[in-house]
Length: 481
Ligand code: NDP
Image 1 (cartoon, rainbow, N blue to C red):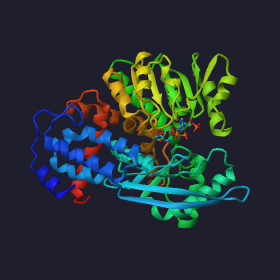
Image 2 (tube, protein in one colour):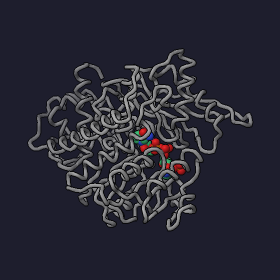
Image 3 (cartoon, rainbow, N blue to C red):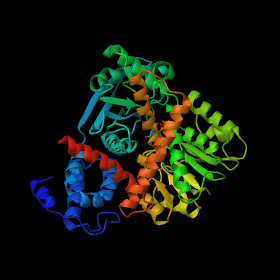
């Protein structure tokens, strides 16, 4: 913030009623201008980072009433849109034919005010600084919401694991870790998986870390059970999402029992969301991958889900094969436009987007409204565009932002860190119970915070404000940005 702006802000007094939302609501022109100015600095500094701008705008849009109550927190806002540290490095590796490839590796250490940096690694050709900064920024709030002592970070590479042999993936992971290891540590920065980084990749990364660092610590989460992993970690994001959605539905006296559910994606989050929906008596009818989606009106039951898990986790096949294998299933190819298809035009009660960012735009949100959906809970990070969220909220659809509803994964990573520090393992039931308790609390916190700030039912505002308050308090107490 400029000195001039800072001076202005210090003189701002609390406005009368809390704002409803957005820059246009007046909590004092100076306050609005101060928040706008933070956003303008972000966009001017990195004009080529649209995903990061989108994530920052969504958060800033919620913070006016908090800054109105605590004007001094504007300093925290200004500081927290800039990562504490950005690490970029080259990752050279040889394919099976002996050809050299050089990918880019990144680690964004975004905020450590409440604990060591924590957040996944994504291996996908689309990975760049904009996407990782958006994910890292979201992670800061998400981790705060879990109530566990974890700061926020994110990392990854533009490496595409699809179509690579096991040995190629291993050589890549080893090369990636041969640089990353010097920047991470059990009390410093603890990465985990994300898109393209599952159990296999975490194993190779952990093995290389252990060899170079010459120590066995909980430096990564999502590890295999035989070397320090936690039960329920693979299930945690999907299960947690459905626990959160269950709580949200209950506020309107609804439940998953008998509900029809659209799920996108067919990876880690989608698979276990599907499993938990079945546990709660719901009927999942869609799943997808980047090539297209299946619509199974009879419902994806446990047997079919087991088939999908084998297809995706072992045979690394495509969802198209589901429609070829089971009767009465429609398969529709994705639109040429990246990330989009007709999946959201199915008749469902609940939608759980679990694939990737910006997969539901305003038109697709409108389709959900028209087809009778009552709730949308994000399993992926930012799968709904800002315009889509607006459409859903304007039409009274319950909407859960990913930073609240998909926090179960990182929460269970936090539980894995605790077990590693204690050198103990908790049972499946113990971990699941803790996960459920955390998700119920996140829901309660977001719900009550939204009410307190005059925006009842607005989980976006509730989650942003609740996550922010803890970080702001910690930052101010420590006296350093
Ligand atoms: P996976 O790699 O296991 O699965 C991703 C799924 O999404 C696949 O079905 C993939 O299809 C599909 N997908 C990926 N990119 C695109 C794209 N550009 N267009 C359409 N479909 C796409 O990842 P996860 O399930 O772990 O992660 C899914 C989402 O959940 C991500 O947004 C991630 O950040 C978020 N998340 C994950 C957590 C976790 O614990 N794993 C925790 C919190 C959030 P295909 O195989 O064709 O690429």
